[in-house]
Amino acid sequence: MKGYFASHFFNDAMFQWTENFARAIEAQTQLDLYVPQRNADINDKKNKDDTITALAISKADTQKLKEANILIACLDGLSIDDGVAAEIMAHGVMAEFEADHGIHFPRLILGILTDMRSQGTGDNRLYRNQMIIGKIQEHGQVIYGYPGEKTYIQETIQAIQDFMKEH
Image 1: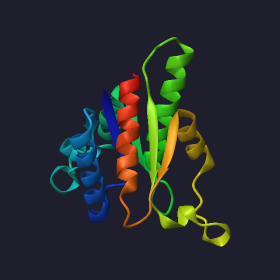
Image 2: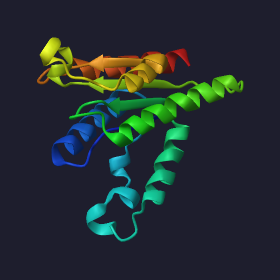
Image 3: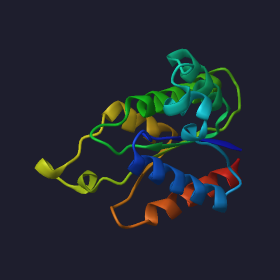
């Protein structure tokens, strides 16, 4: 099975978080995981900025998204990253289109949210776009973590393993 790891990896902290999380998934599952930050052809802005275009990014990432059975999507940040939100919606709509047309291609979306404010209430509550959350819930689940605790990593790996066994 193939996977796609969607995150906002454009700063050092998120680049490292994404890489560490992806490595843990790869070490404990048989998932063939695409991690866009590893694709230098479309993400090495330092050395390839003159050849990286919006069209090249769209084509490369969309092809990998089409092939992916499992989308792991980071929901952290001030709001859900625009690209991550698009990848969630695309993956969910592909699953629905395939089901509507009798195509059996199992798909799962795992949203990962580790912002402590997501567990708050009232003024302490972190808002996430409900259409995006709903699309994740339609096709998978949101896995909640908390800063300093890594249980969400094992929960994610377990969800991937369960899905792979089932399909």
